[in-house]
Image 1 (cartoon, rainbow, N blue to C red):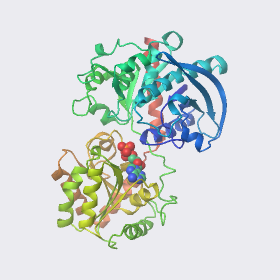
Image 2 (image 1 turned 45 degrees about the vertical axis):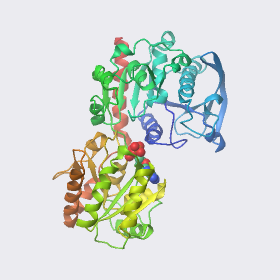
Image 3 (image 1 turned 180 degrees about the vertical axis):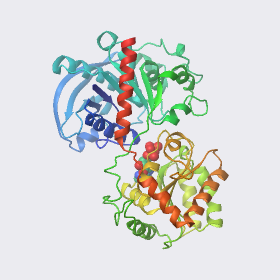
Image 4 (image 1 turned 90 degrees about the vertical axis):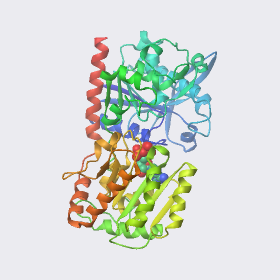
Length: 481
Ligand code: ADP
């Protein structure tokens, strides 16, 4: 099958979040299954500044944006594992930032139009065209919209799959964006969009409406986004398409996240040879200024510090944790100032027991996964979540709220791999930690629990097979009209 992947971030070229990991890893796994997958992404100035090797331009043209025309040149990234096209659109990507300058609507309209121009180019010059276009998140959502409307005569036969990585980021703009897009308002209101989106131009809603199949990054999140609690005002629209919505859990890069070979760790370890984990714990305590102890349970948290991640529950649990238990806590993250400040206050009040490091530090993150006994993810919502899967691999037993991908990867019980609570309330989180700390005291059973998690397979191979099924499904729907 020929598949064109469309994403605003692709690791390792450019990454601000989990989308980049998926767009980097999944195409390679699909290619290993024999599909001809190619990737298209923006040619950000950062890529040029870093001097990544490119070939081209292989084509040049102009893209309409309202009354204007903007320049497009198409390049190929030379060293990418997956064939990767870079859309060089100076009006959109010749700047320091990746997102957030206030004209993201115009930038990603241009990007989507550039994808159509690439498709035309590939068909005419290289004789290649996709059977499936797989667009990711709101930045790429309009590609499906153009394929189904303005470009229906050229590409109407191409199946479209749209993946929602986080429904909280929809790309919602005023109706002024409509003119720049060259699209029509038709087909949206009629599709059951909820209140709050009326009178706006919503990239993600358009991707949902115009794609053959909509996927999200876990089965549970796929169900949740069709409810008003998690639906971010698009639940009505999603519900109206429910027989075309599905969820596929992300994988993790099992070569990159391997405690046996991870160069960030003071000593490697694996499920069959665990002793290095004790060294990692000692070194982590030393690195973070915690009191040295082999026997105290060490809890870890690595996260963006935003409300989504359930940090108010942690804030409420800390006094109990300090008074009623002997646990230590290490936190790495950055984000909203009021959440950072609250954590720093706890650390100052409990030196030796709580350590907080603000900032983004990939190496320290790995040392926390490796050195901690348990890993906290009390998320309010979690489309998939990578943290708990990395924690499992590194023998840090996850304590999570049963939402989204957390619900699909962590189970509590006699054959479980972690600890789970359901209601978003501090006392339920506390009870889950309490159960974990009790289990920790039984070192033989804790070892079994930990080892079970370490041996679990959350690799990309399974996900790639499931996406192949979705592509077949979308093509079937397209053929059936
Ligand atoms: P999200 O994509 O919502 O941030 P995920 O759990 O899917 O949450 O992915 C987060 C990833 O980013 C994990 O691999 C986590 O280890 C990493 N991460 C988050 N914050 C930091 C940080 N401050 N420093 C290093 N890595 C971080």
